[in-house]
Length: 204
Image (cartoon, rainbow, N blue to C red; front, top):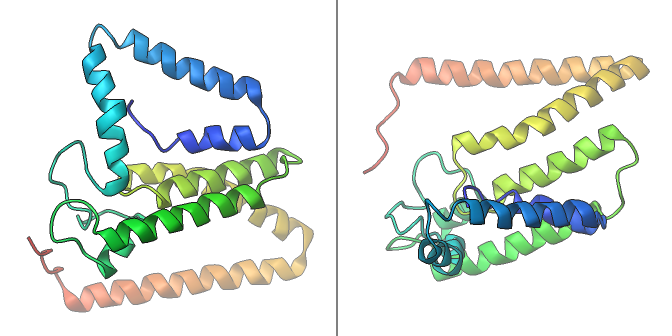
């Protein structure tokens, strides 16, 4: 009941017909719900699964008035909400439709691209990284602490960069140029911040 986005990993296991892993995940979810009964009764759990959980797709946040446009939200629905803002809590109707279409495209496209089982450990890491990044994009709310799911992608990319450098002399120049470009971007951002001073307060 704590986090819902990792359920996409179950979809990835289903895609590759890893039935035992899927069964273990489902049994673990049931077992944890049963173990929580002394602390979270049947009625609270029923309300969570029947009412609270489905409301997340519309931008509701445990019934709290947390706007989708809150500072620090990095999701695709938040990006769409900036184009079609809602007058109240939750997502506007156009944003809900576009978010649903975007989610279907991201998840469906990812499923098609990752339809073949990974051939080695690096490929498996790449697939897990892609699923983890999708977990950051499709929910309505993605805050800074959720970005820990991007770490597998960072590790995979670093490993790929090392292999490229070791296998090709041209890759050394490419990687060096990319790092230089990144430093220039950071330099430009630092200069901009140094000239602007304290950032303006976000609107209330």
